[in-house]
Amino acid sequence: MSDFFDRFRLLQSSGSGRRHIDDRQAPACLRRFRSSAPHDGLTSALPADSTMPQAHADERRDLGASVATLTQTELERHLWQAADILRGTVDAGDYKQYIFGLLFYRRLCDVWDEEFDALLAETGDREEAADPDEHRFHIPPQHHWNAVRKHATQIGQHLNNAFAAIEDANLPLRGVFGDVDFANQERFPDARLEMLLAHFEKHRLRNSDVPPDMLGDAYMYLIAQFAEGSGKKGGEFYTPRQVVKLIVECLDPQPGMSIYDPTCGSGGMLLEAVQHLKDKGQNPRTLALYGQEKNLGTWAIAQINLFLHNIDDAFIAKGDTILSPKRYDPRAQEFVPGVGAFDRVMANPPFSEKVWGYDIWSNGDPFGRDVYGVPPKGYGDLAFVQHMVASLKDNGMLGVVVPHGVLFRGGAEGRIREAMLKADIIEAVIGLAPNLFYGAGIPAAILIIRKDKPAERRGKVLVVNGDATFQPGKAQNHLTDDNVRTLADAFHGFADVEKLARVVPVDEIAANGFNLNISRYVQTGAEAEAVDVAAEVAKLQDLIAKRNEAEAVMFGHLKRLGYVG
Image 1 (cartoon, rainbow, N blue to C red):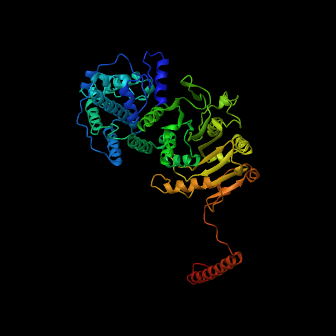
Image 2 (image 1 turned 30 degrees about the vertical axis):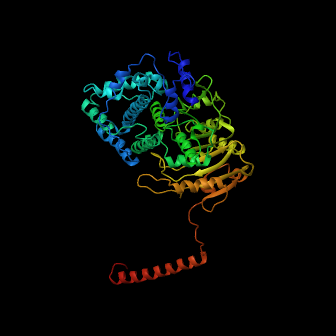
Image 3 (image 1 turned 120 degrees about the vertical axis):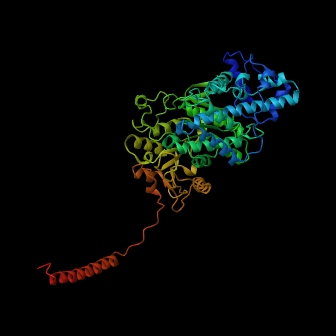
């Protein structure tokens, strides 16, 4: 609950003139409602001048939305079918921003209605039930979903106005609708938008109808579908969930820990850490979640993703992690330049980034992250890895996806790898099967790094070869739950496993020029059969003799026929 009111303090300190309340000052009905209702979203700024309770209530007419219980599959199908309405007018790669924006808008309005109805039933006072201070976020009456639905023309502009008004009224939601623009009537004629909005209101999206976990999982399904359809670009905002699960299983976050993803994409790593605690019957709300994302559209996807999963206390900064790293300052209640310190760090940074900040790092990283060296100009992988190491508490752990080249390339990368191995911070290298990632058929690996290894693991690196541990697919390979468990168990066991894993002394790696090429240490292919050289030579000589006999017979026939002299 403290996170809820921390956000109000942030709003008050921003000079917005919005009223600050805490649990002791909040109306009794709101305290009771908050304690009983599931938390659904980000807390909001609540404008003092926006109360029109009766008008707001009048706008809340139910347009026939179904309240029948949906299955997970039915919900996913319903949401995915919205994309069909846009086909032919919007590029497939752009579907997501429009579908996600409308889904989020619909959810916000339905949850506001749900809160209103609960408060009205408790108090019998429509004005109090519509009071912005009694809601987690404010929906301006004239920009509620049902108000927009009253318009038959210029629907796109009314949607744009609603999105802007909601962002203006709720500081934590600023930018969450991204660059969504429905006002282009050539792309979004009123008739098509009418179809799209009508589709979205077939099913009501209150908490009581669609719980946060269910809607959040459906949203993740949409992200995966859009990523698959986007090819290489899909990998920029989505990491296959089973790969994420493997990293989280290896890092094993515990209650009360801080979790950080410096290239958080759509937020999958942070959400999987939450799910990890849920699966263990532990309280995920004790986690402190942080991230950074430079693509503003992807940042918006992450914010919506967290909201729909009922997470309202994650802090995701905007900006380039390498050029402009940011940490959250709880005292200032804002992001400031700098590098934080976290219990668990996990990420899937862009592979072999060409433009990553070499010109700056070559003169010394301003934030002191280049402890092990400066990566080459055309390969930024180890810049991200070093940022993650710098962001790690002394007793923390990190898991990061890297291309295989990081394991064996020479030059500057080889020197960085050597320095990290000599510092004994690399705990494991887990090789993954090829074609697991969208738009990247090459195999990748996961580095597990710990500044302070357990005593029994010091001076050693566990090498796991997972190139045969996967489920083949038509367009893309996958990891099953059993595959994830096999690889995670190998990491936690930290022991030799035939054709899967080997504990390699750092001294041996040093003798190999600090090369971490996985197949050098663990081979998964069938062993070559023993060859009897003498027997094989005898077979060859016998075959040569038979060939010579056949040639003699053939030339005899040709000579009798006059073809040869």
